[in-house]
Image 1 (cartoon, rainbow, N blue to C red):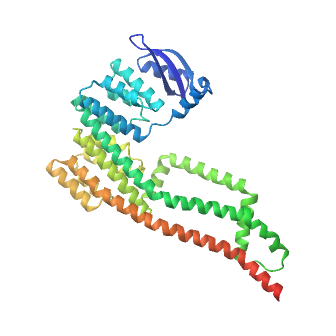
Image 2 (cartoon, helix red, strand yellow):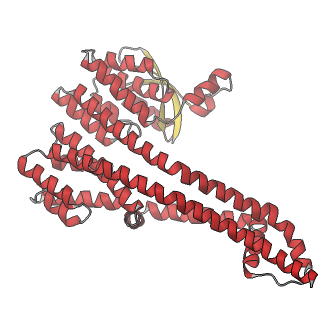
Image 3 (cartoon, rainbow, N blue to C red):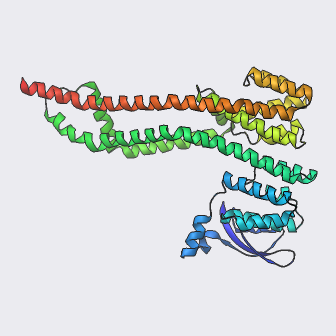
Length: 408
């Protein structure tokens, strides 16, 4: 997809400027017309770009819209609408406070769509890379029920919880990642930069080399002389894996395998079920039936295996079964969660129970992350120690043998 700049006129003949993503110039013109505008000029962003300082600053500011920016957007819009400010005026105020040029253009296009009679949810649905199905569905409910401010605060809360969870995961993985990178750099430096200097000494001596030294010298030789072959092989394996993962069967098998990884698989499952429960709770609290809520949330589940479970649950409900039956039969949920869902169905308070399911998993997730971190750190240190010991042993053993031969 390419980025195009456009100039167009709206229904009141006002000049509108913006950017849009499309496959080619014709598709960009059609997309502009779909916004209710009459295109005047359309040009590729790359060809229109100049290398002035202002242009460089603008290029730097054009970036992907982050979750934090979407969270701020939701909170700002909620405050303004709650204060009685009309939607278009509220969006205009948010537009003035947004720094991301890409997001400014999107908000500007949404305002134009609203002025042309398009509903807010339909305007948002034109940008699925920014506003996912869950977001659009809740906004649509808020529009129809006159509770847009309440829906926006729920969306903000969902974003806050997701950002917090991602932050915990990143923090837990920082130290092991740094250790892994340092170990990789040191080992490669030793194999390529230091070890070859000992090769001449080993070759001129008549002392037989021990097995660890032979292994290390072979690795050093491969890295120094056939690094390009290793690089091509790595790229080929990655390309094959990506192609395999893009197939429906491949993705399902890989995602199923991920969930079976000890400790990490259970953590991933807990995170996704917690997120799924929060999303379903937000939808059902807004008045959306459970069946429709599951249909919306199904597309947001990143794991194909769990997505299949949600699909099976939805199909079972559509065939007249209760929610707790397919949840129990899938075998992924602990008895506590099944009991909460069963209670929610019996009492007619499924939204509250889904919230409780998320609350049940969140401390479990934090506990699992702490355990995983406490296991990873000593494991990484032990691995680094073993590698260093192997390298030292491989270098020192032939030297000791050589010294003993010279003395003898």
